[in-house]
Image (cartoon, rainbow, N blue to C red; front, side, top):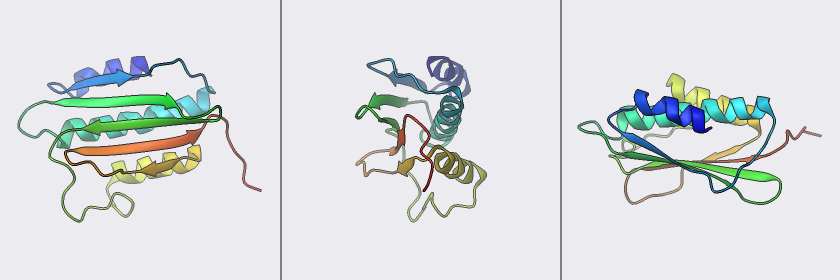
Length: 132
């Protein structure tokens, strides 16, 4: 994840990406790829849309919520999403990609309210859970 964030830094310049990961969390490579792709898309979207006139900060936070789940947050303090925009029903490729990857990961993707900017959270199990 640190490498992904480092690579994204140049893609979203002049915005700055800040990673907060207080502990090392290990999970399988196939799940790590899905998480990295989702974070990549969310950070690129923030870099492209959040600060149209100048750069700003984009925060990526990764924490273990319990022994079986991880929470990823990608947030900015930019202009926010347009009024009435619903990422769950958007036909834009990026939104569709994020939702498809989250579903494949078995994750819950939410958009908690923030007074300023945009925040997306992704809660996912460390291990793949099969449906019964």
